[in-house]
Image 1 (cartoon, rainbow, N blue to C red):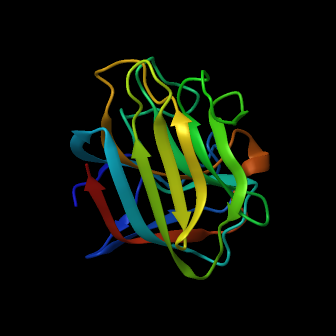
Image 2: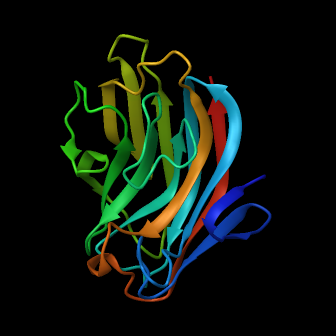
Length: 213
């Protein structure tokens, strides 16, 4: 598995990797945002199913965090920065109950319901809760929309339960836009110290696979 790391680091083993978060870290922390941002380049496609097993340490606690593995068209589609023809979809947890959602960078011209956070779009907020100290299976399926139509699909399964199911997504308005990377984006934040990680902690991603259509 060839992982290109842009910030932070991960511990890579035979069939899993581990990402550490420092106590007091957040996205724009003087300590650095900790966690890890990285990419696995794949063959360009319009449809993909991503699957992995996720373990969250019992000491994981913060106001909110990007977590696990997502998908994107281009590198660095985060931090409130993206260009026309780019998109990313990551998972995010919020609060003590680790309320889950899909956190998306894409056009605001949508048929689906979302919450505009000022940077990304929150889709399916509160539709499930991440759990700690247990290994669970996560699947994310994306099918890009036909150009000029809002008929893209986004589905998320958490422990085999379909928790996000959207079929009118507008991912792209440029024929050159495709799915090109698995996006490993894990950090506490939001911006500001209220988002800091409360303890030294980690997550583990195991048995990462994907199926391109």
